[in-house]
Image (cartoon, rainbow, N blue to C red; front, side, top):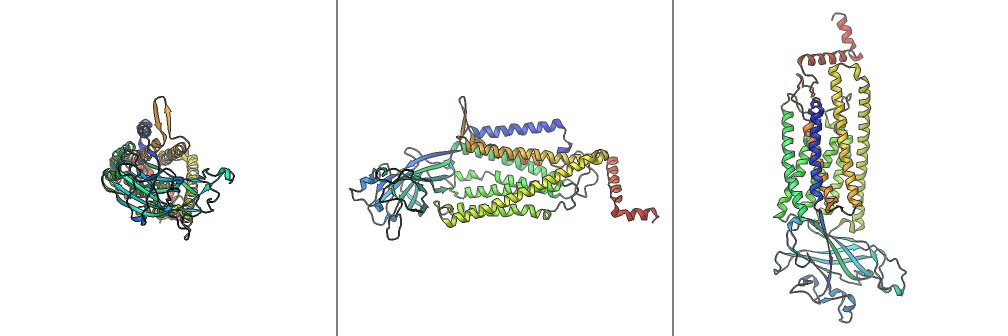
Length: 543
């Protein structure tokens, strides 16, 4: 990789390129900062009465509208009317009245909150589990018939605490319960959705026994903001050809050389391919097609990119071990790349167990059962161990490179001009990439922390900046610019080619005389070692 553009670029030009990239980075943050990424809507279920026997085959119960159900205000009203628990249906219409859902919302995520009152004769037992019979339907016209989308039995573990003393005077107070994952759909292809939730009671089978007195069911629906979706799609549409063009240009420069590509050049090209893969705006098709697998596909694309990025950092450090002989072979990095592969595979299996199953059952969550929780934690722990091993390997290799650099810098003055320029180029290139890599990693961590600890937006005068949205678009744009800069600055420079590229390196010389001098010095250094001293002895004896 000697003779890259970054080595032949003047400081002024490098500053101009850096300034242009910085402007695009600021634009990426500002574009997302003006529009919130997600919208959360609260829904309070309506308690409908359904006295039919075969509850799983009953009609759909609407909470409001011209065909609304027979409702009760609270559970106490059901007692004098002799309404059993099995006859009560909690109905939720999505969205709220006079509104419509849109494919631009991209996904729907719902969490469940149960309002459970304390009763001395009906307390929540230890390790209590609530079992819900949930039906989901959709329609695209306000007067059309509902079409069933899913019907499942949904168990959830209750984690509730009662802070007051359990005495008669505190009856009626609510437990403090953790929110529960409820449903996730990877597309919003229809305008209206309807949820009918039943809590069937069967004392013989211990179903919904010892779960307290459930007063209400509340849902919080989270979906992507339509305006943010358009900005996100626009960014992907713009960045896809940008990265693809620079990738083609980069590989064309590689193939124009008279030697085959070296390992580092191949890895940079593979990084460009993974970035292009994650950029391709296939999400445009989700506007017209009901593709519920888009969330899973997006996770897979991100996983491929980050695995490739981590592999690139390892190989970049290894290829800059200036005195290392086992270079330019991917097999030499199996110890460092192995943890990346194992960790990525574990996260892929975890994602398939979660979002893969949700393709057929939107109410499924791997965290709702003890076995599922242990399995998920096992995959995450293994992936975490692999990540720690990777960073230990990476830190060790960076330390080795900097130690190598320190040794070379102390001997630079004694070298000839040609050899000194060669090592100075290697040192500058490595330090430059380390600097921008640390900056990108630091910005990722800082903005992630800020987005978690802030309220989601900042206000300056009359302008509101959405921190979470700025984090998404800014970090996404930053890694695109990072890959763009790699392929541009580390492409082979055609300005000063040497005569010999057969060993996979461009000679750091500008003329035939300099190249001849460089090769002569390499020859003298090679044959001055003890390993080849017998040749010198034979030459001296006239052989």
